[in-house]
Image (cartoon, rainbow, N blue to C red; front, side, top):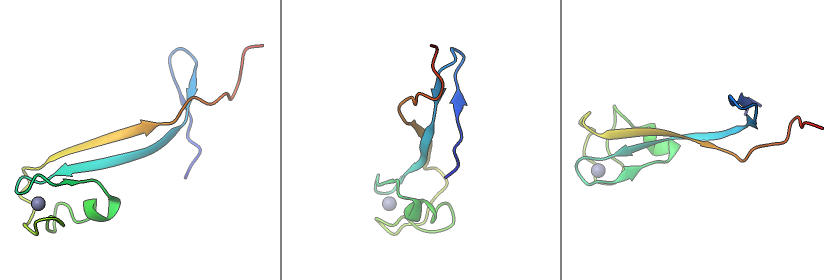
Length: 75
Ligand SMILES: [Zn+2]
């Protein structure tokens, strides 16, 4: 993990925690969201129904940002 800090326009500083991928299977509607399962996409099969990925899955990447951290404050 790197200590990347995001500085917002208003000067507040944020620390990104994790980003996660979610793939929704078109065959069984299984939401694949663990890194191990995501690794099977798009060349493998759905870990739930065993059908091969069709390429029509809905894929979403979301980044979760942790709470603001007081790095510098205005005295
Ligand atoms: Zn499936």
